[in-house]
Image 1 (spheres, helix red, strand yellow):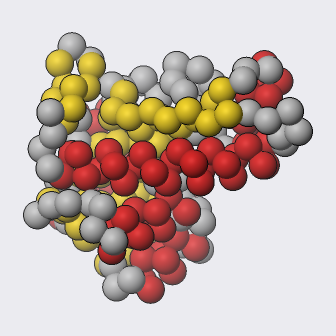
Image 2 (tube, rainbow, N blue to C red; image 1 turned 90 degrees about the horizontal axis):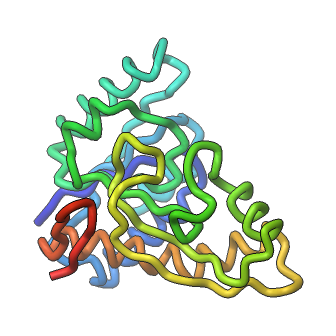
Length: 207
């Protein structure tokens, strides 16, 4: 059974999708053992506590710089014996010391079909605003391994979502979460915990 540590900063809707998937048996051979938040008032912490999952808070602004904060996070995930670290709305950039310690053992869900609408500054509603501005007909979500390049790690799973003519950034965000993010993130986590993911030449192969 693999230990899954989830990093959060806000409401925790993706965390809830993981908890629901765990409780319904979708996630095999893995268990969320700890949720770590960068904010003390993140609602995600309440979600974890309701399901008797251990929580820790490491407030970003209490650390002088990215390196110090990254070291604190790395120490925490090491203490929690994390086999897999999942970014679930974790809005804090960590430096390469964390990635180097956990190669292909950290994953993130991004609300677009990478390489579209991704990279520095593309998060939250901005992703959906840009997709609507560009007039693309399909968007979606991507689960990828985390590397030192923002949204640049090997892609694990993607799911497309149709854009409707009357979409607003808010309606699109909600539909991408419901139809894509909440489905492929638990799937990717389960594939990892079942040892079914193999990375070769920056590509992920599902065994």
